[in-house]
Image (cartoon, rainbow, N blue to C red; front, side, top):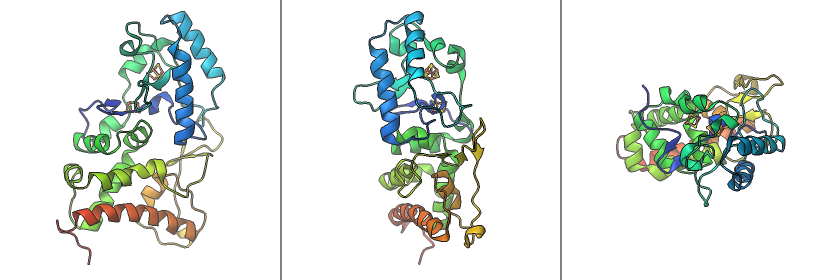
Length: 271
Ligand code: SF4
Ligand code: SF4
């Protein structure tokens, strides 16, 4: 296991999750875009010097929304790399400034920024990473998906179950990319989830500094556990009734069925 692709800037896909891209109670596309746009516009006119960037970073940070998880830093130097706002990245990186490395003006040292790799570099392989890159080339969706290995692997597990045979990332990329994109994109657009609040995917802010891993007790809601429940949690659903749980499962099942329908005839166990 392990990936050789550069996950952070992977062709058309880009991520800034470890720079705090989503670390706000309201981490909707609109809110995240608005914050990144604020950084980008403010830094566009700032001279490429340490003093000027540090001062601009302080001002941006002072006006930023509170982080959802206080222990996870949110960097004011993260922004959009292109005018169309499709690529997310570090505005203090030498390739972006045109020379000086100004990453020390952010929330970590430049060395930390340069060398950090998130757990996805270990837990994804090139096949899965390539699938996510090709299915989620969107500056908001990609970071949500590429950092949630449990969701990606859980999606493949559900497909394997439904098809009664192993399914590979390469097969999905070749034969069902739009449908797979819709399944992965649920991380960004699954309906019926709580609006801005304390939940981010599998994690929750319970008042402490660190994210707390959530669990789902289906039996307490009057339901038997189901294979979809991992994805239900990863999507940020927090069902408080059997109806809410079944509705969330139905969203997952619908997207899985669309992939299966395309692959049917390749060897499915469905009647
Ligand atoms: S969260 Fe992972 S993939 Fe995303 S920018 Fe950080 S190291 Fe790269
Ligand atoms: S300075 Fe570091 S933490 Fe800030 S956006 Fe750049 S890479 Fe991310």
